[in-house]
Structures are given as C-alpha cells and as structure tokens.
Length: 184
Image 1 (cartoon, rainbow, N blue to C red):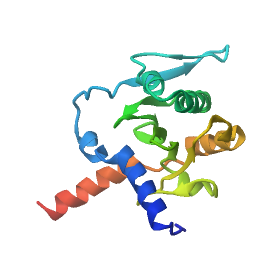
Image 2: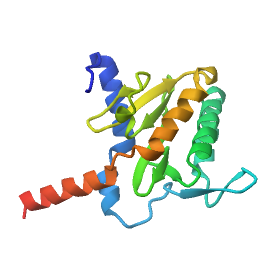
Image 3: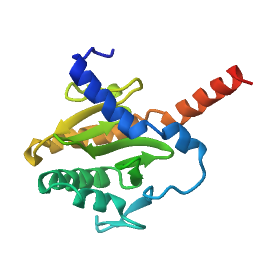
Image 4: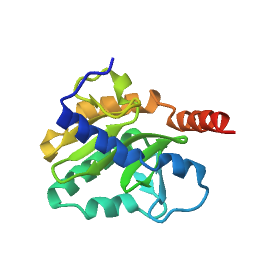
C-alpha cells in the first residue's frame, strides 16, 4: 500500500524519480551510444577484490561532488559493488545506476541538500525507512552525512534488490505496445 506524503516531500521525491527515469522510454528505443552513458561491469575474483572495466564515469561522478557527498557516494558504491558483483553499472541520465539484466535496481544522485539512494523495486521491500517515490515501485532514502549510512540496513536492501526486481524494461515495452495499438 502506498502512503500519502506531504506535498513538499512528495514533490521532492517525485522530482528525484523523474531525474532518474525521465528519458528512459526514449533511451530504451534507441540503439545509439549516448555520451556519458558508459557501462562498467564488475567482476569479483576469488580474492574478493572487485575490478572494473571500461570508462569509470561513476568514479568521476563521485569525485565531482563536495568532499562530504563524495564520501557518501564512495561508501554507497563500495557497498553496492560488493552486494551486486555481477550487476552492470553506468552513469544513466546523469546518475550512477546498477542494472540486473535490462532493469535498473539501485542508483544514487546528489542534490544540493543530500544524496538520494533509490531502489526501483524498493516499495516491495517492506522497509519503513525507504519512502515510496514516483508512480511505479520505487522507494528511496536520503543521506546528508556519511555516519547516517546504516550498512546493515543497506546490505539488507541490496540483497532484496538483487532478487525483488521490478520489470521496468518490460513495463516500458508494454506501455509502448499499448500506445502503438491505440494509435495504429
């Protein structure tokens, strides 16, 4: 069940989800390369070390932030990479996002006041700390300081994100099919 948020908080939350997803429909129809949308895959070795390949736009994203927000971004990335070692990640619509298959599962973005951590299927997690956002299944939390990150909760959410995946890609494909059928 989706709870009603105060107007100001609802607007901020909706703006955040729009920031991540605004051009997703157009992108999902495009096969062309978009500058700044570099994919980075991770591989975990037997030693436990995670290596990256390709252009690392996510590192550049974090480095471009204030020192406080950069520390939050680096901490989130380390936890996400460790929990989702086979997920592909890239800077998508200006924000770091991790994908399982074709579906985005987690991402973050920096605003003037905080760092938003968004889970595309977060509403299904049953976690009161994650607040519903947007019109799909997404939920998010926000951090203003590094010590606010509860790594136990974050790891629990990431574990759920790896198995409770909102079929965002399929949802967009179904929407396009309905539109095409309605407008032959």
